[in-house]
Amino acid sequence: FAAVSGSSAATTATVGRITLAELDKLGYDRAIAMGSLAGAGTLGFLIPPSLIMIVYAILAEVSMGKMFMAGVLPGLLLAGVYAGYIIYRGIRNPEIAPRMQESYSWKERFSALTDLAPTFILIAVVLGSIYAGVATPTEAAALGVLGATIFAFLNRKMTGKILFACLLGAVKTNAMIMLIVIGAGFLSRVMGFLGIPAALTEAIISMQLSPYMLMLLLGCVYIVLGCLLDGFSIVLMTLPIALPMVTAAGFDPIWFGIYLILMVEVSQITPPVGFNLFVIQGLTDEPIIKIARHALPFFFLMLFTTAVLTLFPQIALFLPNLMSG
Image 1: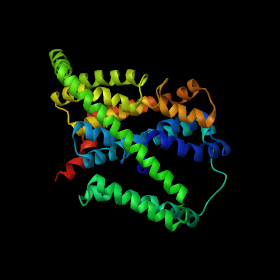
Image 2: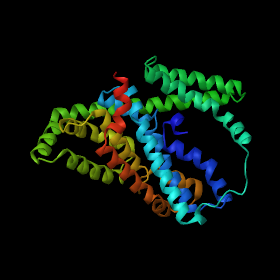
Image 3: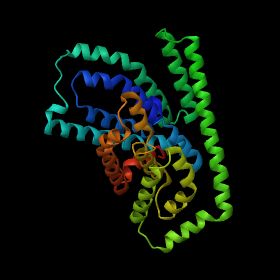
Image 4: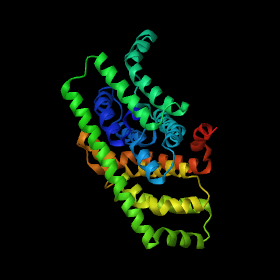
């Protein structure tokens, strides 16, 4: 779902409405259900196409197509880390994830998969056209909208009310992105005029930190900011300062975009401003601190994935480098 949503909160809300009640009915441990939903919902930012990737690509003046491709392998890695942790917990304590009482034949399973065919086709069209170089990200987005509209009409689910709601949502999203871009441009010019990025870059360089110590320092700063600000605000406020320092240290701006998005994902499950925590609270009526405690293992799993990505940057850069030829 993250591949067709682009939003962490939307992914958490939609998947949560579908899965939480079903998991309760099947006897799954509520703590692992809420924690996994909070963590997995953050994939909405990392799995392309992603709203925050679009914002980063515009502000950092990097290829949007390469940003999308850079998020694929890290997103799959993070999903695999989540899955491995849940499987490990289930093996250690089978009570938290009981065996399914109902069984389905392979014919029934393949039949159910046909309902997902439109989703897979849309993902293939949008990302495939970008990766193949036959469409720009803007053109691929238009193809995705056209494909989604066609499928909605074919399934006889498109009504005038739904179409209006979709158009209104698109206008609101684009207005939000443009306001962020305008604000970022203004802030960047003011900071450049005051010499703040250059001064901070020189200060960091004078500290003679190794590149990895620099990323560790930035990671700590982002974790603190994640307790106070939402993800878009973090990108807006820090990018004009952080990007020059990171590039001066020899890191690829495409790679740093994925690193930054992972840090923003961490902020989505960090109280008191973690949006995913509030979304789950609205679905479950559980105290926010309790939800945050259940999400804590996934917080550390994201930090682990970020460390792996820092040590092995080609995980993020492999597909973008293929695009470059």
